[in-house]
Image (cartoon, rainbow, N blue to C red; front, side, top):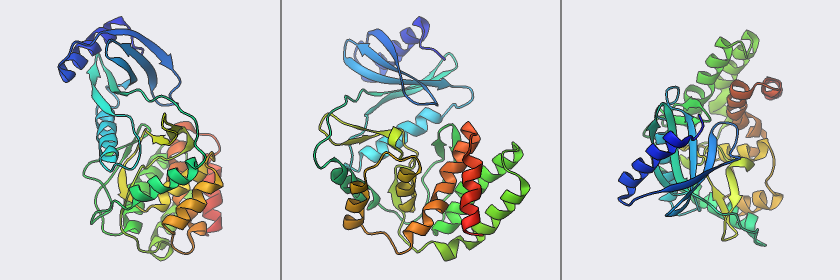
Length: 294
């Protein structure tokens, strides 16, 4: 899926048409951008941009969905995000071009500012859990069929679709599937009622950076309206967030009682995602959560 000369030539044509100005790509420098996509910094006559490439045949609409998610988050005016510029397919390669975000230095109140921005994002709400369209988390389809209650949404749109995939691929054994099905039936008694909150959806330490203004810049979203404990549980899955972040969030927008006990349940979804995408010890982690709630 490399950005070769033919690809870059066609990309310059599409960018020129999109922006109504002649775009000349002088260089495409490969940079580290995660485990899912090939990523590049584009040096052009109009400045630097960020380019993602993946298999356009396997994931024909993945970057269209990411473009939409970035646009949705940007409209809240809560965080700095890359500006989505253009997406499409070139020679079976899907691509997304966004603005290139420069790194900055951490301010003394970085984590408090981060928590404040996240709480403001989470105050964006609507009448149902879900999103107007399906999208992706990593390369996995993320279903957003609307439901009025979080436990039903979480069971039918998040956990069970991935449980089925994991069982079909022999990632999960039947006994674990039955435990997960049993847990899904208990979700209404576990989660307190809360209004749907606009979520980043994949908020781990690899999906934010310190922007040039010293504040958090977030990217690579898997946007939907869900339970806000999902974003917070995701921040704890791999670490990288200072304790000041959690104290500040709790002070600004307190969580319902018992949130500590629900962290593992909220992490079941990203654990299933990672078990399907990367294997590893995630199945053991899933079993550990289920054991706590058995």
